[in-house]
Image 1 (cartoon, rainbow, N blue to C red):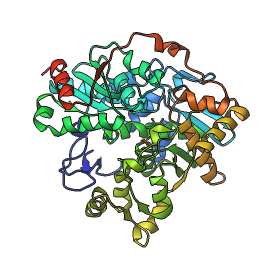
Image 2 (image 1 turned 30 degrees about the horizontal axis):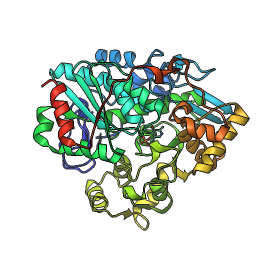
Image 3 (image 1 turned 90 degrees about the vertical axis):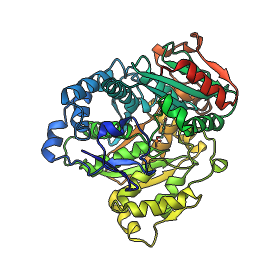
Image 4 (image 1 turned 180 degrees about the horizontal axis):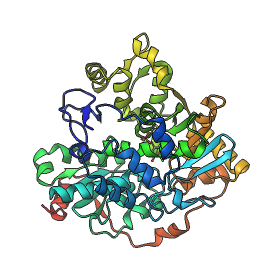
Length: 477
Ligand SMILES: *Cc1c(COP(=O)(O)O)cnc(C)c1O
C-alpha cells in the first residue's frame, strides 16, 4: 500500500515514510492510492473479533511495510482494558468501545474511555506506540511541539509519556483551561513531558508553534515534529471503530446503519467515509456541527467557505469550534474523482481567503452517492439533549456527543439503526453539565481528586525566543 497527496505533486510513499510527517511537501494530505476492499467473507470473519484483532485485520490493509508480528504486538499493547480503563457504569472495559443501547435502534458508541476521556485517545495511543517503534528502528529522536486549549494536547501527552526517543513540549494558555484539564496535563511527572503555560490566549500559543516550525534550521537541528489531526495514522486508527460499532449494533452483515459524528476538523467522519468506501454497509454518515457550521453549510449548499478566527464562536462544545476543517480536503479529493488539479484549484481559492462551490457542477450530482447528511446544534439544543437523555435513560452525555445525538435523531433515515459516536465524557465539561442538570458530572473513580496532585509546568510570556531556549535546554540533540 502506498500513499499519494491530494495535490498530486508528491511521489507515492509507504506508511512508515509518512508516519512522522504532516502535510505532503506539495501542501496536500496523504491518502492511500486505492482504498482496500473488504469482502463479504472478511466481514463475516471479522464480526466476532476482539477490538485488538479487528484493529489488526483493518490496519494491516493500510500498513504493509511493518512486519505483521511487530504490528500485531504494537496493536495488542495499545487496545487493552488497562488503557481504555474508564468505562461508564454497566459497560465492559474489555470491549474497548462499548455500545450503549438507549432504545431499539438508537445507540451510543463509547469512544472516550481512554486516559484523557476523549475519543482522541483511540488514535493517539496507537500513534505513540507506532512513533516509538519507528524512531527506534531509524535510530532517530523526535521533539513534538504543539499548542492546545485542552483535548489534543492532553491526548498527545498521555500517548507519548515514557516513550523512548520522544519528548513533548506542549504550550497551553496560562489560566484559560479548567482546573480538571490543567490537572490532567500538568500532573504528569514523566521526564519526557514538558508543559509550558503561555501568558496569553490559545492563538498566541499557536503562533509560537508556527514561528518555531518556520525556523527551518532550528526545526531540523532539534527534530521538531507535530501530532496534528491531519496525520494519516490517526485517521486510519479511527476507521477501526466504525467496523466495531457496526458489528455491535447489527445481527448480520446484510444490515445498513447510520453513524452520527460530532465534527470539527473532519478527521473522525473522514474515517467513517473511508470505512464506507472499503465496503462497510453504512447507509448514512451524519455530520453534526455546533454554531460553527462551515461543514453543515457545505453539505446543505455546496459552498465551502472557511471563516476567520474573528468569525469563530466560542461555544459549549469547544473541541468543535473550528473555522476551517483541516481533513476536509481528503473527502473533496474523492468527491472530485481524485482529480488533484481540481483540488489545487479549490484550495487555491480557500488559501487566498475565498470559497469554492460545487452547485451546478457534476460534483453536486455525485455528492448523494457519498451518503452524507448534516445538521447543526446550538447551546440550547445541547442543554435540552443532555437533560432528555438524563431524564429518559439515566445516561449522561457531554456537550459534543449531545450535538451528535440531536442532529443524528433529526437526520436519520427511518429504519436505519443509529450509532451516535461519543467523543468525550461529561466529566470534562462540568460547567455545562451543571447548567443542564443542576448537578455535576460523574467522574471516573480513578480520577477523583487529580486537582490535588503536584503539578509540573513552566510559565512563560508570549516569547518565541524563550520557547526555543527552553527546547534547546531540554531536547537531546
Ligand atoms: C476533536 C474533537 C471533536 C472533533 O473531531 P474531528 O475529528 O476534529 O472532526 C469532537 N468532539 C471532541 C470531544 C473532540 O475532542
